[in-house]
Each structure stands twice: as structure tokens, then as C-alpha cells.
Image (cartoon, rainbow, N blue to C red; front, top):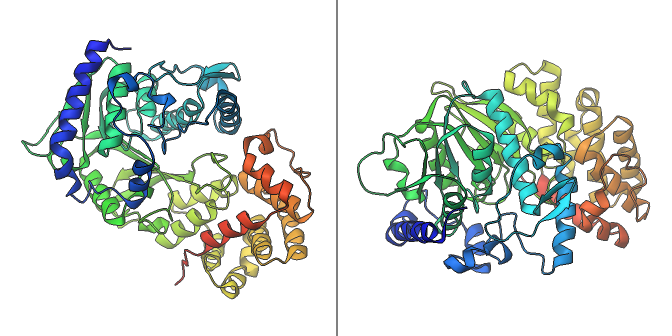
Length: 480
């Protein structure tokens, strides 16, 4: 970790850029603060002093970025246990333990699965390890020294971890002022890097030297002409206005290096992006698509999907209707059940009958129950039986038709529904039977501990939260 004197110097450099550039950046299409983030910033503390920064992870500076405080030590420990239980389902805990966590910020650390780490570390390490695996699989030269850009780096944990996992040449962070201040100072203090401020005005930046941590506000994008091997966005494009999202995609298409990849872990329905095809994918090729994690961090959370994109200037884009259906189905926890279909979609070789079934199911995402009923066709039942039974069950449950819902959920489970969708089906069945336990859940995952909200729902036999979530997911109205 860096010295106090070096930390002070870094603070001054980052603060100077923010003080002189923030207003100009906010006036650009990229630099707008969305309503979502305006709410977050208004509820938390921002711009810690240097003294506060040394223990910033014990305050509320990380609120909104997977590092929310729990109020007391016992609750912090339980939160860490729950988080590790969720994310061990996605990543082997031994891989988490191989990564180091800095003591900077005074994190609350507890031992789980042999690793003394914080809850936020489990969350961010799962993301960083996934990025590493996708780079290894899809980048043209993954063993080479890489130039990496992260748009929206939070407080900097993933950035720090990627320096442990990849051969990093230079790293660039672009973010809003309140978050850029945290992430840049955090990574600069934990890594031996040279800070390079990126200003809004000035000559084009043709290259960023190895060993550098470049940092800038979104308004500096037009001056960056450096080509990046890996570009990352985790969960913040989904929180931006649509015009901002379109501005970023257009810029990324220009600065992605040959053989490079753009990794987007985002969903829809949170801000400007209302459905998956709102992401402007013309000029990109989808290399991989799927549910980002086996289980989300919260039972009723929006579920991000991962898209691995490469530049394809002459590509008109993907089949948007199919992308919409797949992304919306993932909101119901259908991850493992869609893997083969997603692989075929990316390869462009979905068989005719499966494609027709997906086209039918697009009509399920409608506020009209009659439209949803029409979407559950015989063709969809034949080609996607577990998925169709699951959708029919949730529709009946939302309408209060519990006998029909139970039959359909039972059929979906018999047809080997898997992953988070299976957990949701078991939870719905428990509510129908007024059980406080998940009688049908037989996986190595302590779901009632991991999701305390699920425990409360079962204790109250309250299907209301699931019904509200269902209505929100289907209200995208794909066929309108």
C-alpha cells in the first residue's frame, strides 16, 4: 500500500481534475448523471477526506456499489457468510482465496470457505474472475500485455483484482466524479502505477504508456484515440439514460482494438434501457450471451446478462427479437436452461423449431394475460417444455390460481428445471403449500440463509413480492 505522502499527492491530482472538469463533463451526452445515480449520491457520503479514505469502507462511501454497511459487527459477519454462500455457486471458493484483498479502507473481513475476505470482495472477485475467464476464451491474444478500460469502476475493487489476474499494460477508468474519486485513489494506492489524468480539452491521446492508471470523467471520451484490448462495464450501463448508453456504444466501437472484446454485464428495465435490444449492437458481433451469475446477489434483484462483444463494422447486428426473448427469460432465473439455446443464437444456428418456439414466447412478455396465454403454444411446449411449464406456473400464481400453478410448477420441476429458476419454483411451491421450508429444494445451496428475504416471505406465506416482480418483468411488452 502506498505511503501517506504519495496518497496525498494522488488525492490532489484526482481532486484537481474533478474540480476543473466536472461541469464541462456533465454537459456532454456521456457525462449526465442519471436519475438512478442522483438518488444514490444524495443518500450517501461522497468525496472522503484523506483520513476518512483510510477507513472509507467502514463508512457509507461505497453505498450503491456492493459495499453497503450492515450497522453492527455481527450483521457484517452474517452478510459476509451469506454473500460467500451465494457466490461459491458461481466460482470455486479456492479461486477467491488465491486473490488478495487490500487492507486499505479498513474492510470488515471474516473467514468463509478458508478465505479471510470481506463480503464485497466475494462479489467483486466473482466478477473479476469471470472477466479473466472470458478474456482467456475470447480475446485474440489473451497472454499478451493488455490495455484495459473500465467504464464505471465503482470503488475500484475489480480494477485492483484484474491487476492480479491479467497481464495489464495500462488501465483506464472512466466514471462520474463521485465514483472516479474513490476508484482512482484506491487503485493508485494498491498498485504500482503512474497516474495519468485525461482532460476534456487538449490534443488527441494516441497512446497510454504501460504502467499507467489513466483516469477521466465521461466528457473526456472524444479526446481518447487509444485502442483498448478489453473494455468492461459491470452494472452501470443499465443505470444510464438511453442517450448516454448509445453514446458509449458508438465510442466503444471506435476505440476497440483489433481482436479486442467489450464485456457488458447489464440488464434492462432499470433506467433508459427498457429491453435488451435497446443496447445498440449494430457494428458489434455477440461472441457469448448468458446469465451472468448462477444466483443473483438478491432474491428479487434485476438479473444481468453477460454479452461478450467484438467489433464488426459491417455487421447489421443480431436478431433483436430473439435477444429480447432470451434476456427477458433470464429475468425469471432461466440461466442453465438457456445455455444451449444462447450458444446456438450466438453461432447463428438455432434450429427452425426452437426459433419458432422462442418467437411464440416473445408474446408472453406482455401486460395482457390473454396475450400471455396465447404465447404458451403447443409448439413452445414441445420444444421448450420445462420453460413453458415454468412460465405457465408463474402466470397462474400471479393471478391467484394456486391449484393450476402447483400443477405447472410440479411439471417444470419434473422436467428438470435448474439453477435459480428451480429455486424460484420451489419457493413458489412452498408459498402455495404454506410451508416455511423449501421442501422440494435438494441442491447444495443454503438458500434460506443466503436470501433472508425468502425466509421472511415463506414465514408470512406472502406471494406478493413474487407477483409484483412477475408483473414488472412481463410489462416490457415485447410485441407491442
